Length: 239
Image 1 (cartoon, rainbow, N blue to C red):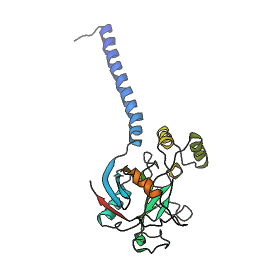
Image 2: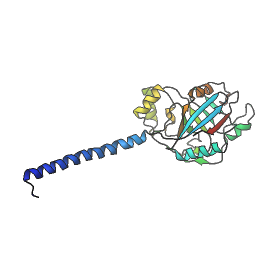
Image 3: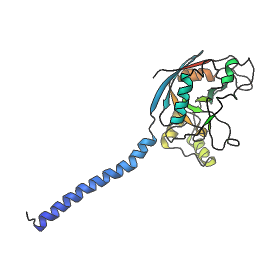
Image 4: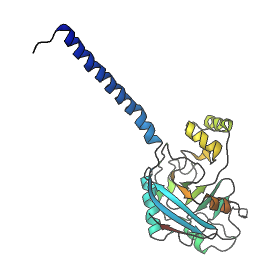
């Protein structure tokens, strides 16, 4: 078969047109897919935290596999059952996971217990400290520069609302923090503890029972932030 000069040009043009659309499609995948990944929060398991002040349902995430697997194993072993929310700070967070809290006497200082190991930090751009976030407690940077998490102690964020100006100041003071527009919108409308972002591992979030978190955060506490009336917990896997 013979092609005229015009038909060859037309064929070449059609191929180039298709190639251009294909090239644009590849570019879109390249730029948009990482963005989709960064904003993805994938539930791995659903757990129920039962307390004397109500139930809290949380989802653990696939994006933090080490923390999720560890927490799930502890729950299945009944590790948390009978423990206390031993540290409660209104407009900040509620904390549990100290095995020594189970038998602690009233007024006793608690909060140093653990299973005897730590977990490497797992920071993910889509997992940040919005209200209801479940994070791993840890020792400070001075003795824990790797920011490894406690093997069992965890907290649930209550937090408060922030302005753009406050978020700007946090970015200026902490070079590792850069808030996305999504984060800013959440911190301005839902609230949280943005100064903890990428310094403490977030591995889940509350999907039901934020009112219970507020109720626990509002209880009276002593000078060590321990509730004056014990709040015991039981955690079970429901999905």
